[in-house]
Length: 110
Length: 174
Image 1 (cartoon, rainbow over the protein chains, first blue to last red):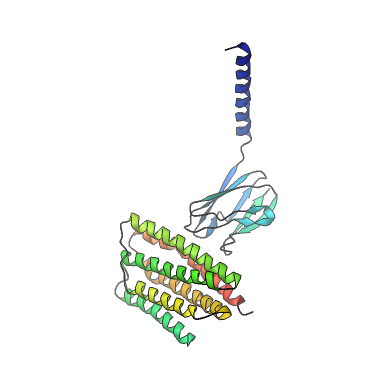
Image 2 (cartoon, rainbow over the protein chains, first blue to last red):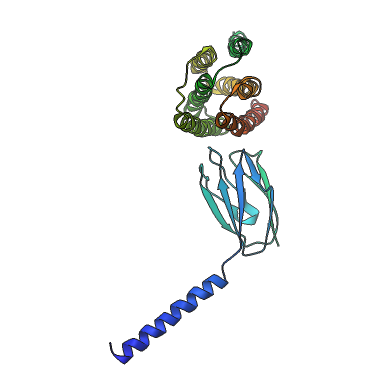
């Protein structure tokens, strides 16, 4: 292996390592909301801007998590499915399952 | 005529659980058959509403019933398969099936707003009947803990559907 190629390999390795460290350092906090028995648990989830909220559906039927003003607009989350959302807008948002509007939750983004 | 038909259907639905309750309640295999039949009956009516109604809210409700009751039935079928319980036909399941067939046959004779009203009225009564059966007969009678837990878990689906159907009922004809 030539000296030039070795230098390139080292540079790439360092770059890859720093990207890895960078991505670990920037990993967002993940909050989980469980959908079970046609309820959101916990009913209110408080997160920081940039955090990730994952809705996990434990019911045998599809649900959504929807608050258009929060930019939250999940597709139908099937049985045992999940939906990942990054909280980009600050505020207090009431959200619902559009399929079952009796299901209500609150997302607070500080 | 319609009132008499509905009264007959309600009588059929309510008489059978009573008969079972008096004889000690259904066993788990019978409960499995009741759950599967109750869901299937509402899937059939929902499919009809989805295809026949011209009202977008009624169509959407019908579609929702098909989706949700199919999901509940899959969960119930998966569980009884796992538990190696073979659903056992019984008077309650039979009366549910007969009531469902009569309802669909009746709905097929109707059109437009009359269809929507009859479908939604029946959905309100039907879900109320099923919730009563879940609370008074099925949950108290279920022996297997997982079967009981499933009934508890799916109960909110019927409550949500009842609320939705009642809301729809209040908007029809306005």
